[in-house]
Length: 309
Image 1 (tube, rainbow, N blue to C red):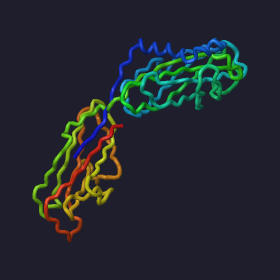
Image 2: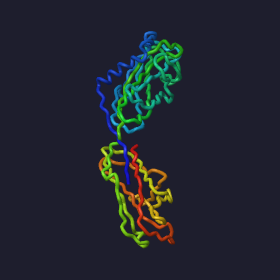
Image 3: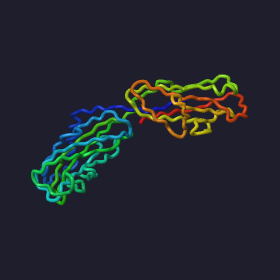
Image 4: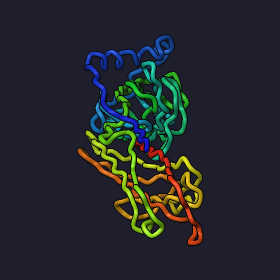
């Protein structure tokens, strides 16, 4: 029985590199920035995620969510409304999925300085007087990349006067580091296991069984799915019964911890804990019918696939 597995772990980001990425955010709009009237609003990050985040180890496709709280003061009157927009990109070779950026239950407009849309602050699109102070929460929701390696996600937030798009400010920026690696689990058991039933008679079959025990060691708690696939023809997918190489004789498989039949059509979920974890699959030969006489040697092969989530 062959067992396959995947793995995961953590990055190391340096403060100097992080600061360089933050400085490079200004390079997104070098030519356009000179055409804008700035200092319309001043915003400070007062809560939520830091400007430089190091998530460490994440699994492929893992959900990533963070929020930032901004405290803003209006320095120049916004006659119609103040719109928030954002830009983002991955700064190194590996590119992950886009993040969904939200504000007050709405999607934030995508674009740099001069971008307007329907994502107004503090709550609705309305005029804001000089000295008006408000707080707002911007959320980022997405998934990690699937390829193994280090990811660097950088983003910027911008405030633009609705209807007066040349009045615009760069109000915040940040960088997010994470590393996708193979799961932190390793197979302790041999990758191939042979089970022997010896010499059996028809009367022995009801009590004859062998169990394949699989031991896995994990450095951290990990979710996984496990699927058993027979090499021989499937007799009953939900019943966990497959053919053997001997005509008239089949093999029934079940999970040793629950006694439930293995379902060849779907994977079973496991929550592996830090340290040693064990699972087992029980195999029992059975005649296809009471009138069948199966004589001779037999074998049956299976592949057990472990997928770490």
